Length: 288
Image 1 (cartoon, rainbow, N blue to C red):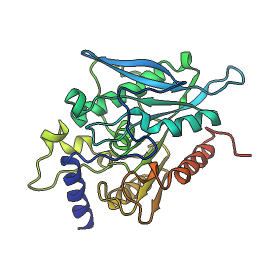
Image 2: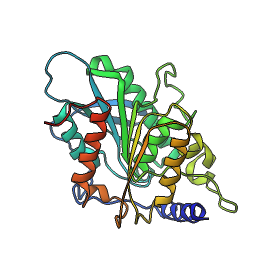
Image 3: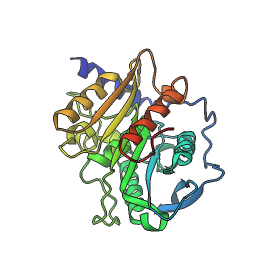
């Protein structure tokens, strides 16, 4: 019953176009203006060029580096890649290549969530296909995101299909690790609630929880226990199913924290925990 109530709350928030706001990036500027980052186009859809902004650390040698790709939140409706600029600058300074990615959304390209998933998969494939040129280790690519962006990160790791037709499917879009901030992970339909029109596909096709299996990448989830947009019960269930399948999944809950909390009061805390998680995977050196 708790999960049913949580799902109803989640869908009500999504259909209302729930969007998180960050005090660290007040305007969520779009098109993004990101100083010191190199931009490249990873996909073109019609007249829309979808870009990534790359934060490259100062290198000591030619050895390929681990990377992380971030997807912004905004209810699949709006938002800006600048959301994860602070985290990306930190991780680049620590020795990873960090990328923030654009993708189509409802208010700009009339996109549905299924289109957002297709863009996210194309983006990760592009990063892996260009790993040699970018100096990235193709076997150490983490993917992260917040809210709808967290859903995209989890979707890239779990969902079969929903791939862009031009994609080279021989190149895997499966991440090697996941860093999720208040992600939407449960999209299952409920009796009397038709969400196919909203998502652009059957809801279970776009629900990460329903496609968890053994062999998923190691995952850390940060979530506010007072989140009224993506209820905590949904990520508890996702973590439970991940662990039952034999996957590493750490859920870090924050008492009294609402949606988007990681941008605000708990920014430093969640960033430090992200750093520790990536150290545990060997993606970052241990802190001195």
